[in-house]
Amino acid sequence: MRINSLIIVGVALAMSGGCAKRQLNKMDAQEDKLAAQYDGSSYEEDMVQADASQEYEDQGDSISPEALAGIQDTITNVYERDFGRCLQEDMDAYNNRWIAGTFAVEFRINTKGKVTEVSLLEEDIKEIKLPPGQKEPRKAKLFGPCIERAIYKWEFEKPPEVEYVHTYTGQVGEAF
Image 1: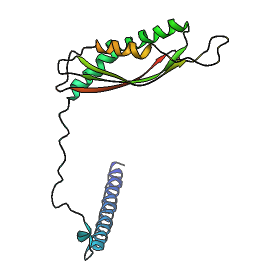
Image 2: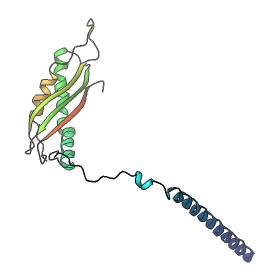
Image 3: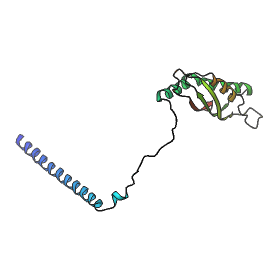
Image 4: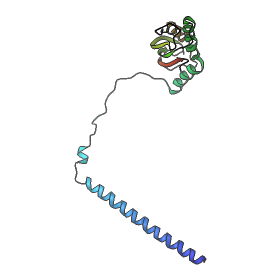
């Protein structure tokens, strides 16, 4: 019984080796056929090659990925609460908790980690549920100036290596 098993295994191995050889021969034939298509063709003449490298204008210095990650982390973990606090001013002024929207702000951080310029790029924050009798939603009036004042106070422990302009886009309110 043992000898029969060995013979069967031996025959199977011998047959599989033959199949593998046939497969390799078939692949070699396909590669030869492909190579023959390019022999005598204008393939190399059709290739586009640059004679010289192109010169680019200096794009200036940049900050390291670690400094950028530090700035984003600080905003998320320390300063994001300023957005909610500023939204609260409009909620109190309108006596309406249902104010929400999106905004984008750009600010410059110097090499000491202090904010030196702030600009509110976009603001679409308004009432999303109207009080009884009111027909049109009111836009937030206090949010923009409040955010600008708050961002001027921001400091970043790991300052950028060069002056850096950061753009932050966010959303505030109960709808989000």
